[in-house]
Amino acid sequence: MTMYGEKVPAADDRPTIKVAAVSWPGVEMEPVATPPGGESGRPGRSRRVRLLLAGGIVAAVLAGGVGLGAYAYAGDVPRGTTVLGTELGGRSRTEAAQALRAELERRADTLNAPLAVTVGEKKAELKPSDVGLAIDVDATVAAAAEADAHAVSRLVGSRTVEPVVTVDQHKLEAALRKVMGSQGREMTMPAIIWTGTTPKPVYPKPALTVDTDGATAVVKAGWLAAEPVTVPLVEKWPATTQEEVDRLVAELARPAVAAPVTLTTDGGSVTIPPTAIARSLRFSADDAGTLTPKVDVKRLRAALGDRLTKLEVEPQDAGLTISGGKPKVVPSKAGRQVDAAALGPALLAVLPKSEGRTVTAELKPAAPELTEAELAKLGIKERVSSFTTHFTGGLSSPRSQNIVRAAKDVDGALVKPGETFSLNGHTGERGYDQGYKDAPTIVNGKLVPGVGGGVSQFTTTLFNATYYAGLEDVEHKPHSFYFSRYPAVIESTIYWPQLDFKFRNNTPHGVLIDTSYTSSSITVSIWSTKIYDSVKTEYGPRRNITQPKTVYLTPGPSCIPAAGAIGFAQDAYRVIKKDGKVLRREKFSWRYDAEPRFICAPKPGGN
Image (tube, rainbow, N blue to C red; front, side, top):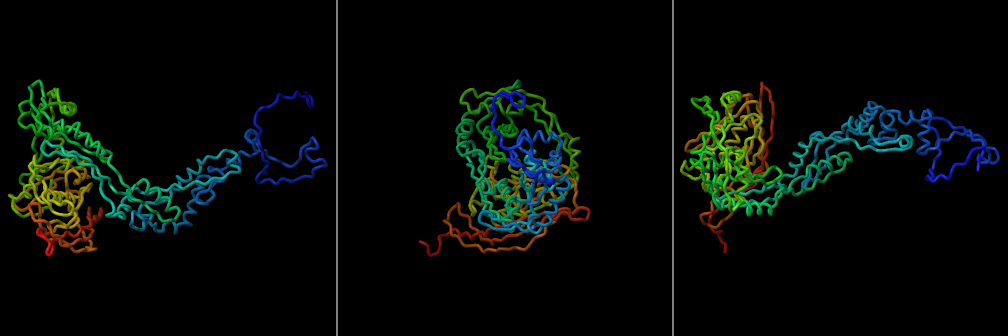
């Protein structure tokens, strides 16, 4: 069949497209009278202009050069795009940024107002500027310009783009932790420690803390909406579970010390006894709490002592000693040693076995890690700080001996620029096998006998020496009770393996730790190159003072009396000056609990 002389095409099975008639923006459409019979009643078309908007038709119109494309794509930002209620569509990026900044100026009072925050059960207000809350105008305009908008949407659609909010996560986390206060608790990292050749598990416990990522999201949203924010405290568990700790004890730690291991080299053989295995097999947790076993070959050498000297010649690093008030270089020496990189993994592989406990190692030339030339580049030439604390009991008391033992372990330690020194990492476990003795230590809020008691005094002395050298504090924790022998706030406890003291050498020069002692004092000096005019402490007043209570304890060897001490909170400011100006002013804060007055006697009038 034909119509108007043309052949009729076959039936079209494509879906019907609905079209809508719209007016051309900015152009007046004059209606004209429709003759009798209406438009459909005559073959001609109305003079009224109509646009049929459908996929293929729009493409044809756009290609037809009628100006529709130019209108739809005018400006960098798609038409109909708003941010914070402000129309940015159809503008260039520069114009859109100006419009958005003008809107932020209008909202300045709201955006700068303190944000009400609840962390756990405590409430506070955060100043947006203190935590870096701001709207990134350029990034927001870029997001608006990249908003998904095809040709039709650009003509008749609309879209809202959320502003890009920035925040200083470190400052926000610090502010939220301050609000959290004593509600939170530190994570107990998993560990396996040794008492002689007996492995003892330290089970992980979760931290109760702020979820930084989640808190950041709700704080941003609350700030934009000018609404109070609630940040819950969440438990954060170490990666290694209690079950995995038990598995490591059963499958590695106990079998490791069940029998000796034979080490063979081309220069002879040596037997590694279980005691040396226990000294060198370490279980260390990373920041995520993943517990990993490792054989510390340096500790293994120390534990084997004279056994390895028959096979090896240990290299000696260049070092420094203090003589006549000046650092003196001790030359380095080359050696010949078992290949440590291969020995550690090889020994770790045989420790779980009950048979075939033999390891073969190669003796290789061993160069010192630090030569005289490298040492000279570190610039260790003068004493930059020194700190002394005092103790009673003379050198015969177990507590004094523990202090001296720790001091000897650390004496002569070198910390290169950029390195972080860990006291736990340097000394390792401070147990009976390492020469430490039982002395009073704080456990669960009271003094009890514990191996290594007194090492906190050395820790405090070392902390103060690094503090007054201007070195970066990485990790420390003051005591729960205040002891008058230490400076308030500026002091630190330590406990293997949960509590550590760490500092970072944030100077361009090397750092030498020099320790000395008398029968009543311990001194730590830091040698380097002086870069600051002075480092001093300014204290704020004590506040929130609480009085001690009296607690009666069962008399016996484990009962240690205490006179008690008040509790209080206080701030200390480290003021670092250089070239006559204050370079940094750092705040340290702590809250001491009131130490009970412990009496080793039955409570008067008690049953």
